[in-house]
Image (cartoon, rainbow, N blue to C red; front, side, top):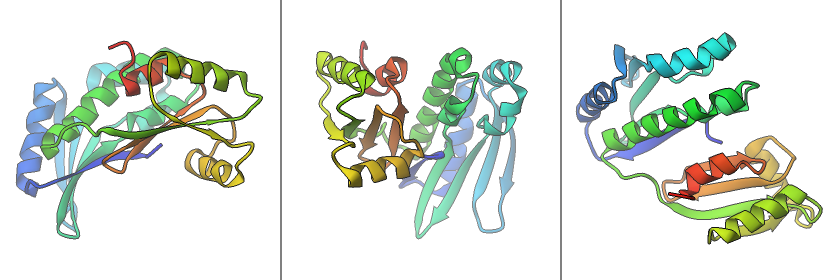
Length: 207
């Protein structure tokens, strides 16, 4: 998965900064500071106190992974706005307990970035299910996606070395199933294992 979630915008730096602050306040997230970097980028610090408390009460070692900064930068004539991807917290031992909180935070912060950029949520372009012939969970996920009429490309990594290498390069993991959701923004999400909750969230299954 990508470490951060960025969107390109046609708005000016000042317009985006104002929209970020307004969006945080609207979401009852405290704006705690603003810092202009020497290169021209701007960092807006924030604290989503209730969710941060839930996460850090479970494991204070997650402090460095809790998103607390929005970045606005001008690069090659275009303005971008982004935030750390809350799903980084999903790789921790406490994930089963804080999964709901991570999902809520992701929805809020990605919504904030889209809103500040003045763009809609990215649209799914394609879905790849990386699988092997002998993996029972791959078969279960394949049947689950088909049951919910989700179109996807089935990639058999035990028969395609190049695809296997690409999967490992993106995720750093050799296990399957792995599901790659690619968006029209060029961004993508990776789901490791047959994670129904995460798949339902990304693919709007059951909504």
